[in-house]
Amino acid sequence: TVVAKQRDTDTGQFQEVYSEDRIRDILRDTRLSTSEVAEELDCHRTTAHRKLRELENEGKIESTPAGNTLLWEI
Image (cartoon, rainbow, N blue to C red):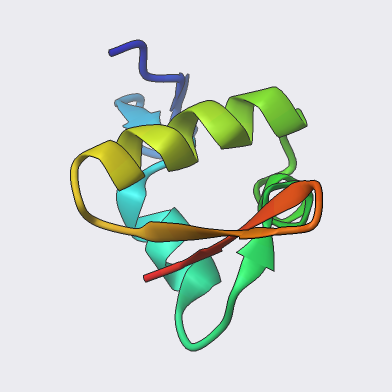
């Protein structure tokens, strides 16, 4: 698994940019499309999709087809 990280300017330590916790916060009490999640994360749609699929494969979130997109939820 490739994990995008960036350096915290205060601590100097690297932190995961698209963390599971951040995605779960975004999806809490709602269902969003891949594009909507990407917008919330401020990343490319394919980056969001890859991370969402990873979490789905781990059984942590679910997707439901809706037309030509997927809706994601906890």
